[in-house]
Image (tube, rainbow, N blue to C red; front, side):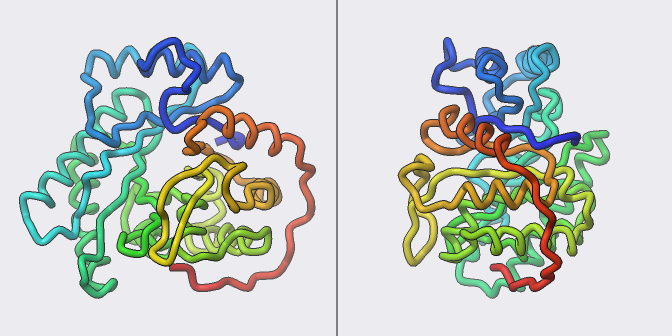
Length: 290
């Protein structure tokens, strides 16, 4: 991607109605450049509508992504739930592809009391099967496991990056609010730089040119994420995050998941544009991220 684009997680509140097409029009009117189609409660977009969404996005020059349903757990002990999870991710990828979306973000599952190494192997196998099915259909949309905010959820940054290395056509969705909530750390310029350097070292510089990032305010406790907040109501150091993204010349999309959606998306975009790029530090210290 040529630059870093800013947009909303779903239809802006200021849209004329709650349709994706009106959302795309409003994103353009606001001066934003991307929007995530929120399939979080289920994939309700039909094929005909998906093609209309593609047309609207192309006409307005808006980049689309998809967030798959929350009801995905590839580590469930019940086969029917694993099969349903696979169907939901496949359905999101298929409709997302028809909508012209570039990627699908999703939460892979929960540890369910199992060892993390065991869970990794299970989730890796299921995602590989999804990728193979999509490949057979000629669908090359990027599948993006998300860094999750709860300690009970699979999705530490290290786990996500390992999936990206191990499986073709898989890239990360880096949610910096979730990472902060999950660890209680990673909220300073130096720490954000370590995250970006880790991605560069593990996946190559090209990964920083195609980033899919989620940002929001976040309320958290000992078990991680509790709920999203507006940036002004949280301790997330978004200013240092933006500076790190600028200094690492990160490109791709930033999706704002704050409750106020477009207000914080516009705030992020405005602040990012005001930052002057400085020379990157040569410090290569990398912490282990969970």
